[in-house]
Image 1 (cartoon, rainbow over the protein chains, first blue to last red):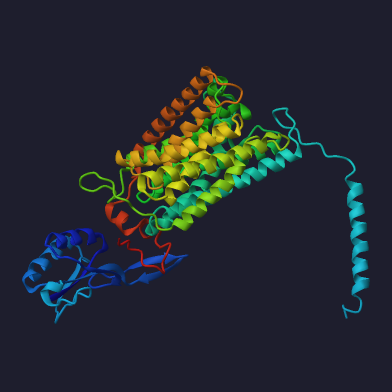
Image 2 (image 1 turned 135 degrees about the vertical axis):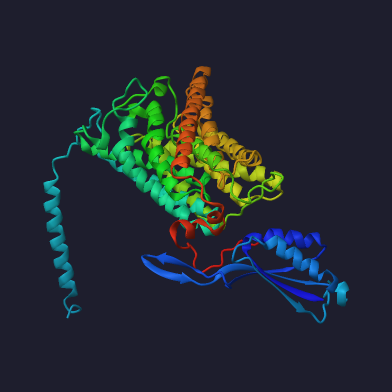
Length: 112
Length: 445
């Protein structure tokens, strides 16, 4: 099992969610975060004084997938979230030891 | 030290006060006559006081509109909405004083347009003129600010400023002169036919509503409002408490809007007008709640709030010539109409973020018609026909000129922001800062 930690631009969330749903991925976790990479922040003005906003609003999607589905899931996220502009985000792939469904207690791939 | 002498100090104070007061009373033995007004009519001090207080209450409706519009739209655009509201009042006040008031209330050219009194020139009796000006200014500003709701979240600020000049300087005053010119120094062809619109269901609210319709059509829907199959998607307002606060403020201000239109504190009908206003608002809220409850299985808060406003808009035309029972019927119908109108317009492709076109345009027309239908002096088809003529004339004039104006503004300075600006939010892109800098503003649902 792999954990895909996807940091994307907020405007692309619907597309990424739909492309993951289309692969049969049953659920995901979403968070509203701030961050920056190559996309730097920007300057704003408040009552005549300039200040810098360093962190840009982003969305993080965490989804755990089976090993077989991993490559296709990454591809789905990348193609749905991509706009070609700096700030599109990143996908990190992490190994997962186990998953357990709390309601039934099943574990492994069946829990996903 | 003070404690020991406090009784003596108190007695001294009372004696001085009585001495001063007695001097005041004897100086006022002669009554002061009211200043002469240009229309030869006598306006008593109570007329001045009442009309001015009513004008101040209608001014406060600007806060109501600002809160409704901010509450029903997204947080990333809140500063922009507030700025548009601040500026349509500020710019509108100046334009109307300089220009619009003359076109609306100056000596008329054939009953079609006023021709004199720019910057209030030519009026020697400044006192009543000032009262009437400030009262009419806040009415003009009400019509102007209705439009910012229909055009919210995607309009270029500079384009909106240009439009404000056009509506307060031309569109609103010209139609106003047709219906209300003789309230001051003018005359209008529509009022000569007997058109009834006591406080402005058509003159103010439909004019604002149809101008908003033109703007929303020229702009097009917000990004994400319709899916690829053209089905509408909800774009949630960010703050229902603000929206509700705005509606309550508007309801309060309407007690100045309707009874104040008597411009006379000596006129006892201000009492029945106030009662009619409240009954219609309440019935409107209930009517909308009932319809929404049936259609959506739950009593919807934002629709009910819109319903109260719809009732208020609808009673505005007939508040002085219909009975309380009629007011309830008019308000109830308006509350039901507004729900169907909001849903229909949305389905037909019109993105109106706050329902301004439905509340003010559609219910303004209904209220104007109802003023004819429920006329307490007796029903007459002739009266209803005149109402229909007025409703039609308002639509043709307002929608026509506003549409042309928006097209021109779009061509010259641009009316709609770019897709990137719209997604990022107008607060930052148009005004360089956020309304809510301490909060994360992405709307994830």
